[in-house]
Amino acid sequence: MNAASSDQTAQSLRAAIRSRARSAVDVCEDALARIDALNPQLNAFNTVVADRAMARARAIDADPDSWRDAPLAGVPVAVKDNLCTAGVRTTASSRMLEHFVPPYDATAIARLESAGAIVVGKTNCDEFAMGSSNENSAFGPVHNPWALDRIPGGTSGGSAAAVASRITPIALGSDTGGSIRQPAALCGVVGLKPTYGRVSRYGLIAHASSLDQIGPLAATVADAALLLRTVAGPDAMDATSAAEPVGDYVGALTGDIRNVRVGVPRVLLEGVDADVARVVTAAFDVLAARGATLVDVDLPHARYATAVYYLVSTAEASSNLARYDGVRYGFRAAEAPGEGGRLDLRTMYARTRAQGFGAEVKRRIMLGTYVLSAGYYDAYYLKAQQVRTLILRDYDQAFARADVVAMPTSPTPAFAIGERVSDPLQMYLADVFTVSANLAGLPAISVPCGFSRGPNMAPSARGLPIGLQLTGRRFDEATLLRIADAYERDTEWSKQIPPIAIR
Ligand code: GLN
Image 1 (cartoon, rainbow, N blue to C red):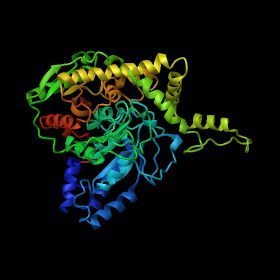
Image 2: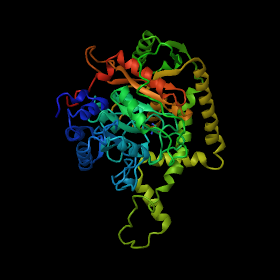
Image 3: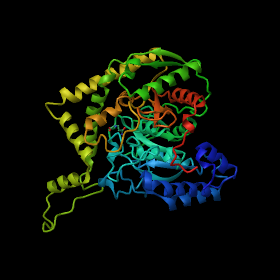
Image 4: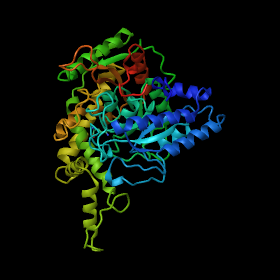
């Protein structure tokens, strides 16, 4: 394995391949060797596509001229296993789709590959992207590279773990209520949820269609910017993708944030973990020292966001998941011995869904069906949609005073595997800071901003990563990236690599 490669970014790897300092084959072999060495401990990958990846790497090496201007030619990438990949199993970490091989690529995957990126594998996630800890995968939990007994965050936990442990410099995830930002924070990497409509959802296995967005995870802000640039933009296959022009996100990283007003909703810091409050407050000071102006903002409806999110998202999920009926996709329950040929349609549906879905997915289908049912619709679903509008207005008002709103990404650092599995409400509270951006359709980024100490830790010991979240105006990803990059330049957090990573 290449000695220096754990510091390598997508941009530096591309430069090395372009100048022929390294071959795409060498870089790809390196990423595959890292998967072999680390995945037994991390469980970050559901599927590794070694042969396919090596064939693509050889093709790039054989024809460097055609790939000269391709921004990611030869760069290995990990993609969440709810993004359809033609000819490669796509499971959404569910038994329901355990053997599903899509006949087409998600638009984001097609764009990645036309930019020359090499998909090395499909990453583990919570089943149908439902969860906050990656413990809801049918294929077992992902382990946090910083502490293997801890959760990596959910639901793009495999993508976050792959980047944190420097298996690949970049990865794609999806975010319905925090699933890119929260695992990015808990694993110490950068994660960005784009504005609703910025990235085509075509080929993303749907969780909640008015909230879902695909976005980048990366070790550095610059790589996140490059990856977003690659996958963003309108798409005829997704009517909700926006025509809004895609920015020069890499060019936006000037380091200059002197004209930026950072809104801080101070009350939201009350009640968060002491390490999180300390580290995030220190991050505000770094931004101020770089010339940003801190202003107080108020988000009066933020306390309803988790409740609203779990009404809206379960309603949409119950509808989206109706398609898994044993007929059109994936798993179908077998007849029991002796039933030969006598399984009626209803029994087949019921058994298929009983056996194919895990407990959390069933809980959400039941919740969502309930809140949409006649008699409860007005009290729950409609009310939630009304409060959703109030949350959106809170942000519009905050953006009259500030360019971005800053807060923690997660109220706590990574918790222990198993700690919250028996208490779904406790699990849902992990999302208090992330769900609003999805409800309001706004872009939001998480950038590493320090480490926990924990009550019993020696001051010298390094704890668990903590993330700073910045939420911005619709389609203003450039400002989020510029601030996060300026912050990254003044701090060392993004350069920290977990001990498990191969140097
Ligand atoms: N934790 C949230 C949920 O369980 C968000 C998940 C996501 O963003 N996909 O729904």
